[in-house]
Picture 1 (cartoon, rainbow, N blue to C red):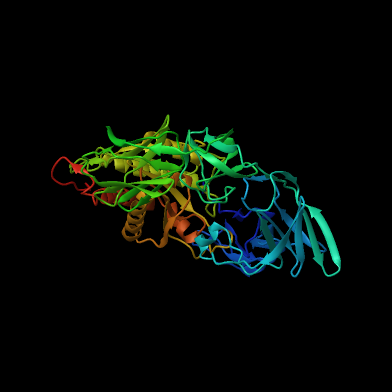
Picture 2: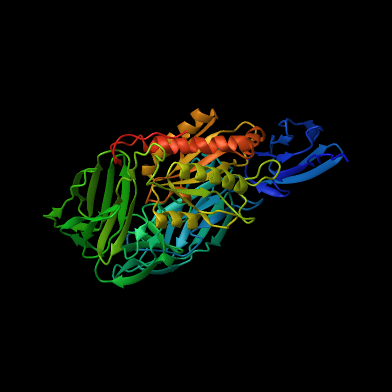
Length: 581
């Protein structure tokens, strides 16, 4: 009996039919019988030796039709391109009236209004007894953050409509109701109410927010589109200057969700004093304890060999601080940098930092600084004593990750390579902590919480890459690394350069990126993108078993090289270590 290998049928794994995008082009990821040509709208496309393809095609606004043919097989796809900038429906003079949700402000805080409208319109807002003129603002619309991943992050061309804005501080205290927008274009005049309302709080009592969750996510503005600031520990108290929907603007500069705090009124502003402080040894951590009269907002920033702790709404009455004799903590200093801001600065013996965590114990701020890890000098197990967290990206049928042209999910490849890497690291003496051993469904935030709880010496999240719709799937390949905390930057760069050189793979680049698996503070945490699932040529390397083994060995070697490039910050028993063959 002769067995005939079943050749792959024509399939497209991305995008799906009726896919919607704002991109001006789209790639079609799929596969077909390598012995049969594939056409898209009559055009023969290039494919890999295994028959995989990923061509890109331009998109017009509205629906775009694609017909794929291979032998006697046909697939039809409709892709809908939507505009990137606000547009007005035919005959509509203005839209997108702001505020679109309830806002409230303290006295003398500006209240701002905006709308999009046809060019050369005259707009004003009636709010209470006050009229506020709106003026057209010249601005260059920015694309999404993902645009930098394909090198297209320049401002967009001006939109066919204009944004009109105006602000006032002249509103009296009390509920002002919903603002009424008025527009005049030639002899046409229209009025329309905004959805949001405006309230001006009285001068007193003050509104004070107290953080009720373990960490309140502070941001630069009232939405998750805005950048993160240092999370505020549970118990933090701060004056509220304004509210937009569910978001509170605190006096020190950050915004938090109201659902993460309790708001009360007070006759006094939430101010604090600080006097003495001290260091306390705790196993693998050094604690810096700062007793305060009340918990205040904080900001932490890492700058090379320095860790800066800012305390806001705080006045120092300090004469004495009990120091420590840790050899890796080279210098400590503090100062009152502004009338209500105290800065504590920690300078380390080397530029590499190993992690931190912060909490309030009552009204005492406790900053825990991670001590450098210790390495064995064993030649056969040079990573003995190290705890390494490995996270195979994605998992389960609910979280496939990117898919290769034949439908292979990213979750399967990351698990395979992670297990190979785990085995090699264990041979080298490391204790390996895995986020998953099988097809578990674990959210990124749960994995990040695992890192914070397990406190490894380093954390690596292994992934394979894809691109936004406007990217070049056929022309983009290579290793990419992503970091967020400054303590992780050197590890990211070192692993990236090591993998590119050792494996002779292309470099996609090193990125600072606000990713959940890069945000943990207790250890250097890096997310690796080990190649592009959507690139037909690179995909064949990704799924090759021999290449996977070589990749795991290269990552292990990169980890070894990085740890052993930190001699001043690590303690050895004696002698030197080398990576066993």
